[in-house]
Image (cartoon, helix red, strand yellow):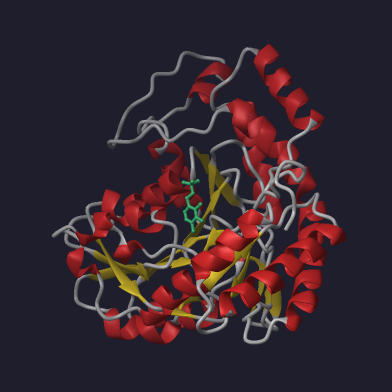
Length: 394
Ligand SMILES: *Cc1c(COP(=O)(O)O)cnc(C)c1O
């Protein structure tokens, strides 16, 4: 066993922040304009260009992005939104914030995403929308999911919190997940995602009218924003035509985001190379399930999870890894198993058993993955996992 005093803990993830981000923040502070302004506008157009969409709307985080989109689409009390329990709880919370009810369906184990075949049995007269997640950056089966949405006249929104840079083939073309098949896709810039602004979010869409409305709603419903007034040659009075929110991103955060975007190609390349090494090396563990892209997906590998062989205790493995000074995390949570979703308002959110969601949570372990990782680091993690699984078998 490694000597803990000598070996620093290997993190599960590590944001890439450096001199470029520091200089960008200094530039904004010196400019005198710190909240939503020119940096946010520039960040939006650069983000839109990378995704191949005409519109990107920056907001304070991905949870507010999801809430704002669902709200703008008219989701409210009495409505049901079909989604997955197997996601960070923010997905289901965004539906609850609208006063609507999340209806949880099960996943497929190969991609940890919504099972297209599970949607139809969950549809009722109250169903208004499907909120699909691209979990851990792995693109969901959008062709099949979009077909169900279309057949039943349901709105389709995408939680792409983890999926910047992920691509999928749709029809005969590769496209960014950020070019949504649904009405809009929502991204997060929390430090656990590929790009970070501390906190932050982005909505991408092809719909210009929706984008304009989202831009008003994120700033108190104001008809004219601060920057338009500032740039105007004449006096402008704004109006407030509907009740809005304060979901703004600041220019300080957007300036960091613009530098982060420049790093994206290199981040994607290093993550994909590290995962290839993991995929090859992990084959030595019998019964271990190792994720891989389908022929129609190119994952950004926001996180890399493995599913443990039957009978191997997750906690024992994770404790063994920690003793080896390697951070791991349990698989993605299941909202329906958390106390907040046992309340009367939400207890009937689950239409059926979710055995695959629970299996994924209880059998998966996330392994360290960050751009500064070396081949030797990957080997160290794999060796530790081999030993941990052997120890758990004994
Ligand atoms: C991180 C995450 C969110 C929440 O993002 P925030 O920016 O922290 O609000 C929502 N959905 C999924 C799938 C996530 O992974």
